[in-house]
Amino acid sequence: MEGADATVQDERDPDIRQPSARHRCTPRPLPALRELLGRFGIDLALHRENGHLPGSFWGEPEAGIVGSTLHVRPDTPVHSALHEACHLICMDPARRAAAHTDAGGDDLEESAVCRLQVLLADHLPGIGQAALMDDMDAWGYSFRLGSTRAWFQSDSEDADAWLRRHGLVAPDGSVRFRTRGQP
Image (cartoon, rainbow, N blue to C red; front, top):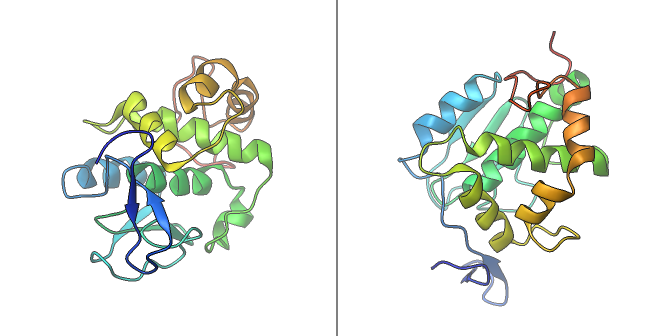
């Protein structure tokens, strides 16, 4: 099922519908995702399909965080895995050490997380920025310009400045592969 308005029925409650995403944490993207997250010191824990996901703020199948571990299962959307991983990357060291389920942070940090997840998508073969932004839109990310792409291209300067100020993105816009507070 594809498209910005595609949804899947939630098996736990037939009255709840969850947006679909084309890219999931299936065996194909997992090695690249594990390698990418490892560059930040983030561990990836893969759980069985329909198994409990520790630290999932939005509920399963969305990714969860507990300490420096990202929890996913094969039906977890890649955008969700990247989003929660980017929360860990953007947290200050004290919050990262105590991370569990709710990443916290303010609105600007949340925007920085969204911008960083788009940047990191290019480091996942077969996904890339365009596909990730389509999945983000399908899930229901909400930006005042109407789409993730429009926001990223025309309205994310404050998020970019935040990432640069905290040393997560270089002056040329490339990802620095370190977490906030790391020398």
